[in-house]
Image (cartoon, rainbow, N blue to C red; front, side, top):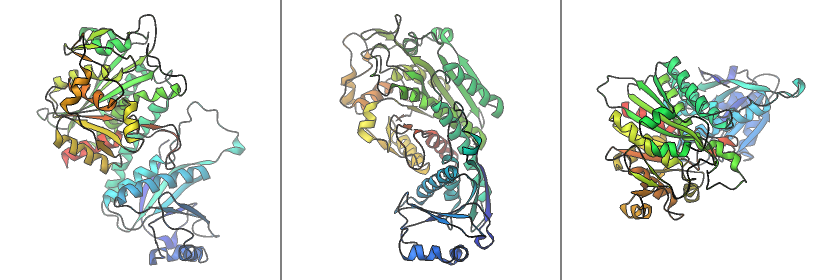
Length: 492
């Protein structure tokens, strides 16, 4: 569902809306701008703030019933104590839109006081994220039980300068998030490698990208033995999908975005525990992030060249599946000992990273729900960030901050290379439980050579198995925002 966004100069005195959202910081008082709202509520807003019934904490909400004119309802949403006002506004907007969607208001009006263009963009992105839900496979409730979905939001601003530009950017980014979350939420029997290929073709047709899709035969001709080892246990044809966005002259080296697309990961012969295995449909969130980012970058018409590469397959146990102890040869020529078939994402990425180097990119960023170890290290708060170029790592971390997708750098020191040395091959695909996220990144580093590279382990941030307050259980859309902000940063 796409939310229609508009922006207007603030006029709270003449407001007529089913729901007015007021975003307030801790210790907020009744300002002159809010006086008309207080008058329409019979002084309830002033009394609420004076009594500190509402204190403006992060995720705090308070619903006030409106009168016969003006706002039918007023929702106070707290920004909390923060040094990142843009991120706080985005979170508050997402929470407000989610509440409005649940109440069935249909539309809402947002007012959060003066805002820069960047802050306004964050508000607009947050409003789009909040009411999102995946209903494609659900039977609609009876008519008398349905609530009016949130379909439109108006943002009131004190200054319209740059507002339309911020709104247009937010709509493009929102479309990328929507695509990534929808793909991620689909069950594995719906979001297959072929479906991801069809989505890529659709992006290319609508937005003018060159799209190439390769199957098992083409991967064999490219000698992608690591990727094919993962795919050999499934009858579904694996797909390597390449999208090329050409936003500037061909002589400018492209950025390369690479995504792991395991449409379902059973673990293969090293099968996962049954409990919670249904969440392994989310093992393609890296691929979804690449596709969502390519959608947004193309809509933004950024003057930059970008290549997006996705490796899509399923990891299944069967009589022909790769086995622990097998040795496979990657496209780079390196021999890999497969210690654990559930460490399959790095095998797919190894061949993708080697392949994308033929474009001579200025930087490679890959994203993958790669390791449970990263979840243990950072929880569900930050993406693990690894790289071989400190300037690029800093650039990616800054992009994540701007996108409200925080990352945290972890080392890839040469000491960790010892842990993935094999007795029978050049390298093995896992170094054991200690430092599991780091040794996985160290494995990937072997396939980028000297190209500036960053690896994003999004295992803890791409989806959630519990409700996240501002957005529901399920996919978050990470790393669409980080990818897009990185590309925007390159052309600012």
